[in-house]
Length: 192
Image 1 (tube, rainbow, N blue to C red):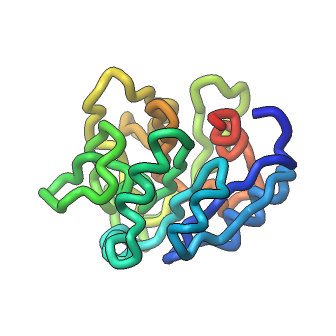
Image 2 (cartoon, rainbow, N blue to C red; image 1 turned 90 degrees about the vertical axis):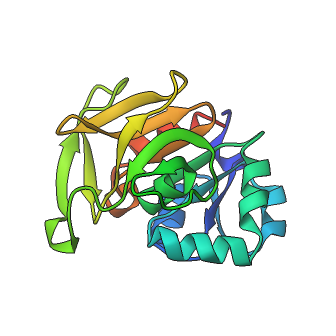
Image 3 (spheres, rainbow, N blue to C red; image 1 turned 45 degrees about the vertical axis):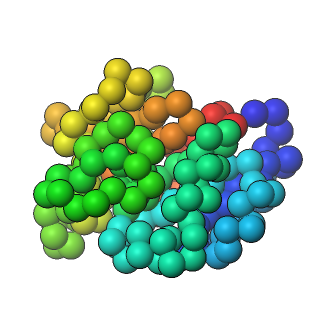
């Protein structure tokens, strides 16, 4: 990454905190774009898959042709999945639910920390960062298993991985866009 002002970061706009992600991207000097059509992917340096409900987003992705388009995108450009976005990236989902993008060598557990009322905020110690980072968990998944040595776990909660990287893929269980802290987004931008 050379200069954030040259970067164009998409946010898949089928569901989730799209505006919040775009605002955070733009706070770092990059251009944020709501992505609603596959043709828009061509002009991007990277894309964020926001939270929401993974099954619903997966159906919409299939309907609008995003599955193959994002699989091709991932061959050369970074993808960051937050919460449901992490589920979309995973190759395996506990319980046998079919995978969506089938890109990241992880098995995820949906709603792993409980229901909506069990949502919480915490400070995470993240590998490579000197200060704890605030994290908001809302009906969050976690990584039940790391299925390849290529996956690097960067943070855990109660022993469970909640932030991981594999090649040009970054996935987290929490919602960094719901805080003012930009450490996680800056980490993603270094992957471009």
